[in-house]
Image 1 (cartoon, one colour):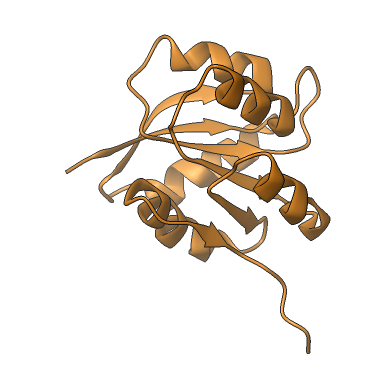
Image 2: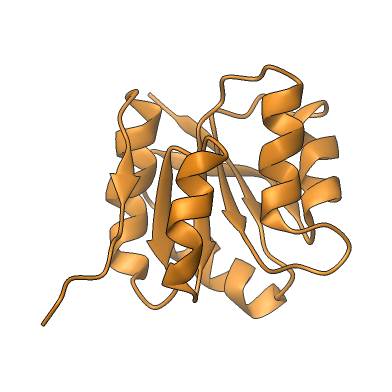
Length: 128
């Protein structure tokens, strides 16, 4: 089984790190984008099972991508990826299947696997 993944982040170093994170796993990055509009365009060019999308990107953020996906009635799960845990509630409301905080990359594999299997994955902060 191979999970075909789209990654969208405006920082090349982040995309490089994501490639390393998924290297050697059943998750294959089949498309990359630097903003939400570009990511949405990739959906028509590739067979994508899951999208991992940064929220803050110039030229179309992750919320725009999520809105376009839902307006097109696509059922592909989307995992949002951000440094701001304040975006979790809006991600849920707009139909994302998960959220992983940047800096918690060890949670990306379980997140992608969970949403691919039809579940959800929410990296919510815990009170100390």
